[in-house]
Length: 309
Ligand SMILES: C[S@@+](CC[C@H](N)C(=O)[O-])C[C@H]1O[C@@H](n2cnc3c(N)ncnc32)[C@H](O)[C@@H]1O
Image 1 (spheres, rainbow, N blue to C red):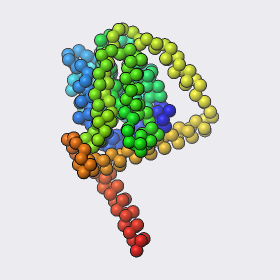
Image 2 (cartoon, rainbow, N blue to C red):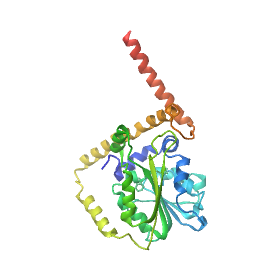
Image 3 (cartoon, protein in one colour):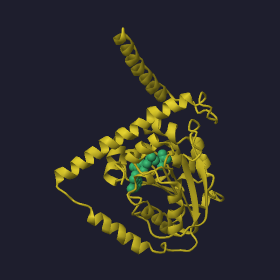
Image 4 (cartoon, helix red, strand yellow):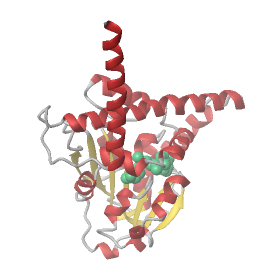
């Protein structure tokens, strides 16, 4: 499993990332345009009658797209991070949503509860993605839809290495397999990317319909197998476990943070590289980081030139 593909590690990662998540992360990697294109593949007709659960709802960015289609009072946001959730709860357009702390792999809801299940950018942290998608199936009603949005393993070897060190970037086929295994029908999908990214298959939004009420076929067996893996996990001593947690969070976060300057550079060089797509302007915080990178690069360049003399 990847460094951040653990529940406790993801919890600590977001404990701090939530401070600048809305300013630096989403505007680069998960933009409003990508969100709307993804949501559009699900059926939102008669939105005022739909009950929706947004799993791994974080600071509520995807929920802000859902409330344009479904009244906020019909939506439950679930996340394991109280820090992320606190930021969603103060957003005026999400005031009427309900919020619940919980685990995507063990949803605290009865079978056949919701009309729509949405999860965006959260699967990367789930130790057992199939279990999360089985849960998606279980909690929606017959005829309901589950929409999963996530990254696809990058093609570029350097990005692939950093991504795989950091968290789960499933190969595209895995998304199809998860949906097939859970038993979804009428599966449809689209690809998403920010404008600066030349890779058309940067991320995927995949939607499926639940054909019959109840749990997915094989649910109990897969749940027991997942529990056995957790049981078999070496417990170790307190110190060992916490050293492992700390080192995973530090190395994983560094790999994750490297993506921010890489993406900012890709953003500004997109026109030179001939990447097509309507430009999404940088915000104040992104510009400040870019200026910082520029200043550091200039410092090292000038130092190298002066040393050569
Ligand atoms: C990249 S953020 C995405 C947030 C939001 N969906 C959005 O569109 O901005 C991922 C979120 O998944 C949550 N998360 C990770 N693992 C989880 C789990 N096992 N159960 C519930 N939430 C989880 C994190 O706390 C974080 O808020």
